[in-house]
Image (cartoon, rainbow, N blue to C red; front, side, top):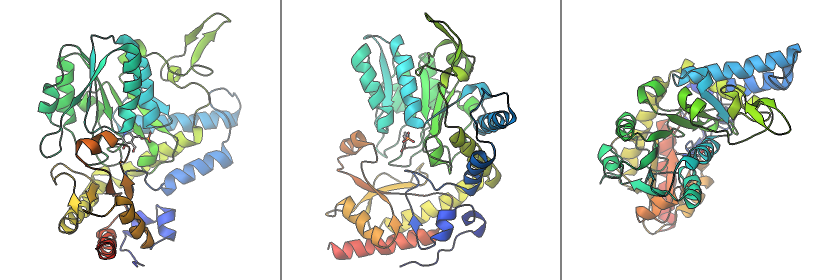
Length: 403
Ligand SMILES: Cc1ncc(COP(=O)(O)O)c(C=O)c1O
């Protein structure tokens, strides 16, 4: 068993769980990352020093809580180069995508289509399927090339004059491949389609710039970027949020004025944040974003690249990796012929190596690739090549046991 991992001391001190469990090899960061100390501390400060509801109170405690919540919005806005009114806090990527599906679909009819891709997570398929049943539009899927990647050509083949929405994942949660976002968005916009970027697997690993991407919407989750669970973001271009998107949740906070007969909506972004939000979660996410900015996302990506390259090299002779090395960031899904992915994970667990198995919420993609589940490792900023060595030891044990 691996008792001591050579972890960058500066990084590890930011992750209490890993610091206090140094024999743990956590390789399930695509599912959720560990929460950084900055986020934990910010949430603790809120609960112990500023606990009150926001926006409503005229007393100091509530004013302080409001300031912290809104400062988190500023942090997130600057992280993706958006304006603060364009940042809506949700419970996560799934919530954000459901909001978009519910709000945009009523504008579509049976003559229209929307374009998704073969790579999508269930969160970017199922809400659209449900809406398609109701409004009659069709769903088209952009195909992968022979390397398992999406490129402009994949989209050219399916986008036509009736395409109203193009929604795609920037980084695949199964293959780790990065899609050419700007190119895809340009193509979609040439057909006047609304563009949605699922950045759940991108937000902690690559620089996101919504102005450069020029997407209409972009969504991500706090818990996959060293922040807390239960908080996420829906970015929308101001013009879309103002003119094209109806609220999905109704109630307090999101209204300007209410009578017994009717209601009018509050200004942006509040019209999309009904009810008491996840105040602590937003504050925690703001702190996590602040921490990433300080650590430097490019520096983090360089470290992750080293680890994933090493993993690719070490695993290639041992397992069947799904997809190629090209355009891939910190995720590798693999199979070992004749051994069930769950058995792989269970044996690895005995060595305190945490990986994911199954469909990773991308069952259609697995079936499309002829796979009945895979094992997946996914790295975070704290992983090192020692973690990959521990994984390799575990995989050799699996192969020996099931030979
Ligand atoms: C690409 C992608 N989209 C959406 C989601 C859903 O995110 P959440 O469960 O945080 O809502 C995930 C989660 O794994 C994901 O990887």
